[in-house]
Length: 261
Image (tube, rainbow, N blue to C red):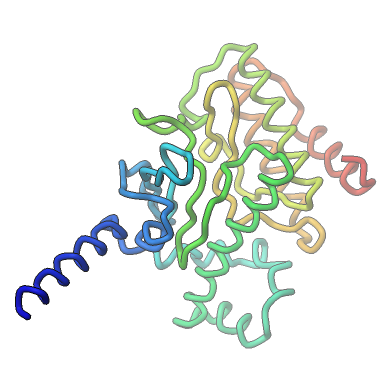
């Protein structure tokens, strides 16, 4: 009997090892047959850590990216009225009060909403043809998504590139086209800059969307749009591309209001 119990324990341990990857927040994706192990840590910042994971063969991918949010991911400034307006439509008053009071429950709720907001934005925009990573699965405070890059490393951020004028013009046009397509689906990134745009094989990919606002319900949407466009155009102006960010923003907003995007 002791031998049988030991054998059973060994089998159970083997099964456990096959569905864990050493990071508790990612184990759910291993148990779902989506990833097999962590390949590398890509970035680690105030809001969370992004890992490159080996994808399970059944996904027909080589790698997937997993973004694990920290406990305090939805920080106070992110839940200021600027970003919060419009989100309260789906919350009960007691939940709104808890978030605004920053109680322990309120902070946990805010984090959960922050993670799910990014997943929902990615799902909406990817389906609409916006150049974002494809979302794959959602965990308690983790998003599993398409990995942009290869085994040697992730795609570089726009901020680190030194494109030629022709390359800069093409990338600028791509990104502004994506901003317009996002707006067509009522979303404004709200924090767009060269720090959250990846470039891979000549194609720009927009990332980091938890703070995206709904232009139908957020009165700061136009101001956020102007800031996003100014950040993009400001970067490319350094590389010889003159875009007129104020005019671009106003044209996009007018076409959005006229349902012509």
